[in-house]
Length: 176
Image (cartoon, rainbow, N blue to C red; front, side):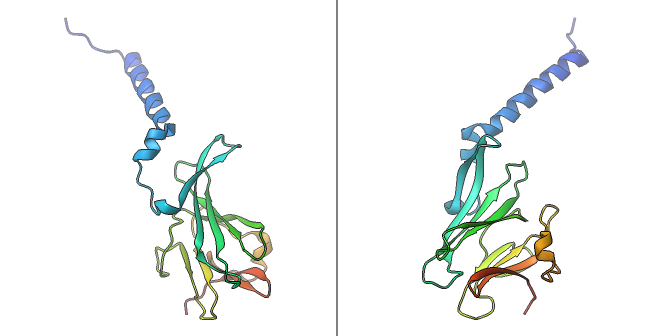
């Protein structure tokens, strides 16, 4: 007589396998096996709300937005999702306070040298004024422009962030 599993046993086995694979993703050995782009800038930061380590990209050697001769800090903080989106945080050396842009989400916070259709994050002197600017493409389902910036004529989700007259300014990116 040949044994045939019942539907209940199959469901139980599949459930056990699902639990095993789900638990494996939070295991530190899993994260060691994953190849992380721009890994030299990637760090895990503990999030007390989610009670887990969150992938974060910390760029502290890319730009001097306020043109004071000291590099400023750019950080992208992950949301902890299965498909992670990252919001922008900036700290200028001249201000020493973190500025958060919680709706400026991108899913690939990897530094690019040139603006093209795929680039989401570029740092360079885009307007040839001697100061670096940040290009950010937040054109995704989660990225949005907050109400207080919509009044400043931001007509797309392709943005330039630059330092003008002592403050950070967010502008619409126009191909030039």
